[in-house]
Amino acid sequence: MPGDPIYKQELLRTYELAGLRLLAWLHLGVAVVDIIGAIITAEGMLLISNLVVAIISFGIFLLIMLRVERVIHLERLGLLVALFDSISLLWLPASWYLFQGNASAPELLVKNDLVIFYILLAAIHSITLRPGQPLLVGVVGALVMTGCYWWAVSAGLPPVTNDWLTSINTRQLDVSSFWFKIWFMLQFGCGTLALLAWRGRQLVARSASQERSITALSRYFSPAIVSELINNDSLSSALNSQQRDVAVLFVDLVSFTHLSESLPPTEIVSLLADYYQRMVACVFANQGSVDKFLGDGLMATFNLLGDQPDAARQAVLTGVAMQEALRDLNELRRLDNLSPLKQRIGIHFGAAVVGNVGTPQRMEFTVIGDTVNTASRLQEICKELRVDFLISAAVYQQFPQAPVKDMGEVSVRGKSDPMRVYAVSG
Picture 1 (cartoon, one colour):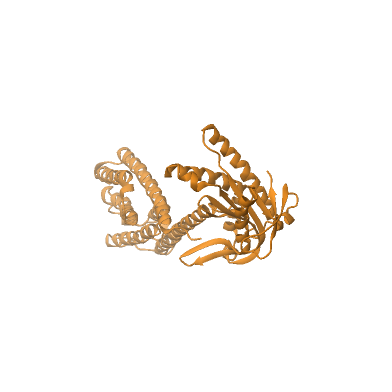
Picture 2: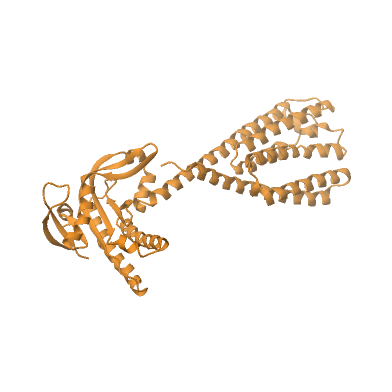
């Protein structure tokens, strides 16, 4: 059962908004720390430049925090934030080099831990579940670090080396180590984290589909059947049309048409909703499924998946529970000076076709066959026999312990031979 595409988009947007809010909060915190740090440790132009960058960052992300829910294109906003962050990181080595009096040491432009900051930044951006953001951070980070390298070369970088130990003990730069950092950042910050963000997005979409499926299935199937359908690896085969023995129950309110003529539409809907809620609870309590609602009644089925050997017994117990539920409802109606409701129940057991029926545009998981028609006829015959609850001989054979009274054989519309039926007391 596919999920609603609109619902998927809404759920994904919720996660993206949560990610962007968290991103904004993190930036606000970093901006405050930068402002405090600049005031304590920096001086001169370095102080001024760091304060300007921190204050601008604080203002931008405060605005995002306050207005992010109004943004229509979250993806564009996320990419702009990722681009701003990636370029802003360039200011760390550049400001130190330009304003701290280290123009004579251009190797500081490349002999730093900038790659760690870019990987952390990519990880932070992956929480938005937009793979484009960590991807952009990685690519811009590689370009920034490459630009710093050529800047250092043009500023008089000392002779390079391929020896890591020499690089540590002298001003020389280990070129192979430097390019490895860029490759590692591209692979991890650009590749792996983007893949994780994409995977997280897929899981959210799958969760949305499953949630919608569970919601839809829960309207008709008992919780146990829903759990089995959702966890079944061969769900599609379980829903394919196949023949099996099922118990079918029909219940219908008596003279509801006459009652509805004296009630406003809102009260009719409210009454039916209350009635349905009580009847459906009885069905689900006995592992049954609601096949369909029929105006002032419903059709319930048992053993849809072939895992209820006592389907007939469960159906009869459901009918008994429905009678008790109606008595409770009528007691409440009596306290409100309302007339009592009456219902009729019919149950038959036999072979039927179970599965998806319909067209590609409109499918319905249902039960069709003579068993269904017979159960409906039994519910109608209740009126002729002046009883509230009838079961067929096939049901009684499956559940001989049922509290019944033999009503003899009766003619059933659509049947050439008469049927023996039993009235259930409960």
